[in-house]
Image (tube, rainbow, N blue to C red; front, side):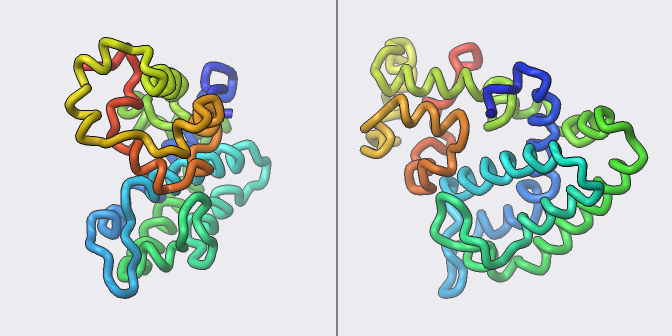
Length: 223
């Protein structure tokens, strides 16, 4: 579970997040994300990326718990599967990445080969540190990272209308964001559990409301 960062699995979560950033998120997919859709390529909006990134992070975490010496290539296969419908989304890598597929494949394979090389030469714990080091501390409020549970708790509290200071400071911005989707507010405990453990199950359309939304900012980091 993502809330397990505070346990012995914390470093593994950080490494999973680092792997996804290196192999997937900080690569050519960003060009597709920033590009307008075409007759062949679906719009890759923030909610879709939210679902995709969190699902891959969970899968990377599971893969890092495997003893398979080729485990990183399992992550490569997941990232580059062109036919798998992305959980929480309505499309595949082919649908969302058309026009960038070759660059995405080249980038992912280069990063996985590099990571596999260091995995062979480092101890298991040192490899987890290596995988997480470039990103650790940069975005510790993302899924799987230490501040994520606090961000989720803050969001649910605000959706209940309990954080008066937040609504005083961010009220105008939240008005521009519009009301939370009905599927989010219908059962806030269920929303809380999904955000903590499997955000992609909320669906890309609902996650789009949360993307870049200050409601998901923890109280201790609130400006």
